Image 1: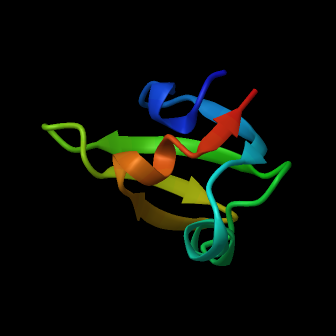
Image 2: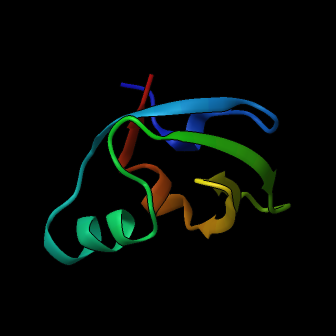
Length: 73
C-alpha cells in the first residue's frame, strides 16, 4: 500500500482510499481530500513534517501521521 507520505516533491497522486476512524477521517475529508481527488506535493519541511500539498486549487499542510492515512495510486 502506497500512502501520500511516500510521494516525492513535484509529483501528483490520486487518492484511492482514506484510512482512519471517526473524527480523524472526517477532518481529512473536510480539508477536501476525498476518494478520486488529485493531490500535488509542493514542499516537505526539512524534518519531513509537515507536508505542503495542493488540493482542489488551494494549499494545505498535512502532518506526516495524517498523510500515512491517505492511500494513493
